[in-house]
Image 1: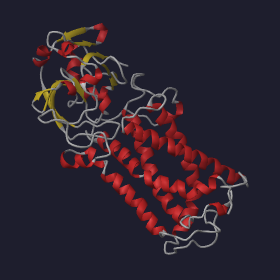
Image 2 (image 1 turned 135 degrees about the vertical axis):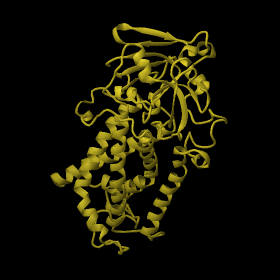
Image 3 (image 1 turned 90 degrees about the vertical axis):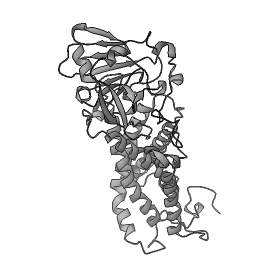
Image 4 (image 1 turned 60 degrees about the horizontal axis):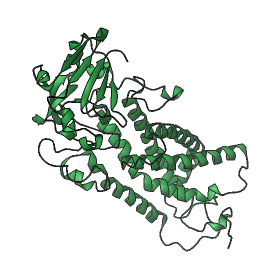
Length: 411
């Protein structure tokens, strides 16, 4: 028996072959394309060109060619795109692992390059495997709130996505015609002809290729069923047993819906949010500034909006009823009759996104509020009391809680 992985006879599984690999490849071709597009949309939703406080990805250069002002309609846009991105990414993990297993002999094949085309294929395969493992691993860690990677998740995942997708695209161009030819033999249990993935000395099969695909598909469906529920409320959320924001809602009453950071975690004390201590500072044109306590805010025109919260980790809530002062009305208080950009700062002193910038189109939307109430009652401390921002279709981290200062103007 050969002991070197570079020998074709070393790999004896009878499952490996062109047809099995091609089926997995076609599934990944569609799925990863959707992941890449929704990932780019997620990055655009942060309005990274607006202000350095939003952009965690320095020197993106040409990689930011597609960026545009993130819209506020429909209000569930980010909930949909990011929910699809994260849930689909998790569901594709068994397919990705099976695909990597099916082609692992090619990573050890000798000689390293038989021609220029073969060298390009091997290079794309190396970048594809490394990039895929990196992207899926960092994505899962972020979803599970385990920030153990070196550096910020945003630039790591952003640059990794471009490297991975470039290799994926090159590999797809090289291999898609062959994969489609192999799929024409769907009725053949054994592949026609010899191939470099077919073992010359296969072991006895214990499961058919279709059975193996059933196991892979079942694993994907199991992951889908145990994670997708966190994008919903009620009983469905309790099915998301593998997600941090799955399970029962945190508490009851009007404020009993999902949160990411508690007031205690953010270091927000009741002393600094009490009516005697807390003031909202609003600054605008020519340095004009006003200081408002909560009773003064309550004397302004109050409006209501039904809006969800959706976060980059893929979880979301259904529409909650928010009531507060429109952002565009606060801009008008300091001389901006036409909506402009705004920089929002929180009482939170540490951590990412304690400061966030919003575009003029987000300020202009009549549903964008400095919320003081939710579902008919005062905000709870964990939901941002005494005041928080809520903007339609914006990522959750841009809906700043425990707001202390708002600076309107071109950013």
